[in-house]
Image (cartoon, rainbow, N blue to C red):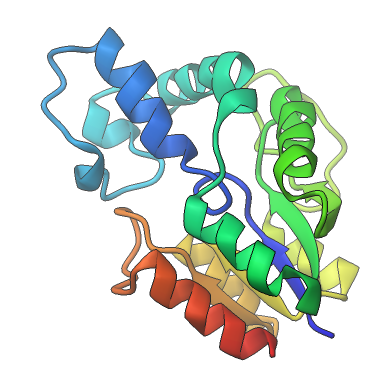
Length: 193
């Protein structure tokens, strides 16, 4: 039985899309971008702000609204159909201040299948934490049990592949995937079987 490591934000949920549509755009009506134009992640340069300003906005959204995000419907359907055929863990790069919200959200929607929640803290200015791993690949190497990573970050996917893992890129505007979510999950099904 293979073990699949799932990124949380923008893989299990549509956090960036919902943040942009319901949080950023209403507060910035002069922003002419649409979600599909967010060709970089983080998108601060495209939004004309600093990375710190972007992260502050995203963190406010996480703390106020992330618990209410819905799962990506296709992903939830995949779990309902194929989830029992693999072991699963959530592996997020969430800040410490929102990790409990993310973990609770994962267990609420995916706890039937995902029994482990791990995170590599996304650091914030002025925050001092013990450093065990800086990148997800470092965690995966240390943990040594995952067979597959599914993530929206091309860098995380490439790093996992360098470790010898299978890696699947969730299609988002900021990466180069040419697949649909359904095609991506079909690829995952073939890898996991």
